Length: 276
Ligand SMILES: Nc1ncnc2c1ncn2[C@@H]1O[C@H](COP(=O)(O)OP(=O)(O)OP(=O)(O)O)[C@@H](O)[C@H]1O
Ligand SMILES: [Mg+2]
Image (cartoon, rainbow, N blue to C red; front, side, top):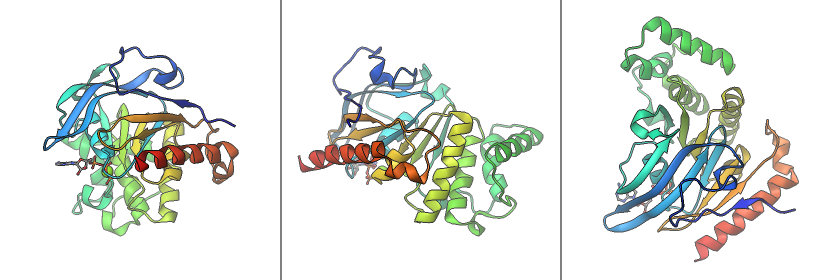
């Protein structure tokens, strides 16, 4: 069995790259064109070109310190870049509605606000009337089958529940794309499964495109339609590996030959890269 891979060069390419490298025929949600970023004179990205498909989950995997967080922070508008352009659904980042889930859910929530008020916060600062906010939150809870006592404060929830609350906060403003930086890394195994299942449920209900950094290869592949394998710095996309297993992905997915082969292939590429 062979794993379907799509190499994407970091060299300049025309914007309209082939159907295949646009994610199996899907229109791109994010276009990265000639992105450059250095820190203290050290080049991290030099002319990176990338397209992230709409209605798909894309994982980013690569060696420590290769720039995974920097990439999603630049693409989501949290971090300025030195050169190049990023478009979200054809518009500038500033015009796009994005959701962002931070690695450390504890530091990203306001501890003095109830879980409900944390979720409502992005709409409140936009001046959305309370009645509309309540409706929006109720709708999310029903759609994603979430039963939490949201009047409680964040500390009183388990880690997985807190991460779920921060995901709901990222979703409440109905983003066009959801960015997640290591959403499972602060969670234990049981909570990882819980949050992973909820993310899958959210994706099945919304087809919201997601771009997530995941440092555990199994987790990077499990939910993904494609995994971007990054090189050491100066960082480029070594390969885009497709994973087309049926959804919903279940525990049995992990023992599916396609999963095993995809995992093996990604690991090979990763090992070659860190050996360089
Ligand atoms: N604000 C900054 N100032 C200077 N160097 C930085 C800054 N942010 C990141 N770097 C450097 O850029 C490189 C990439 O950092 P980044 O955090 O994006 O990597 P990463 O792939 O997410 O790492 P990890 O696997 O540890 O999460 C690292 O060498 C890091 O030290
Ligand atoms: Mg990181």
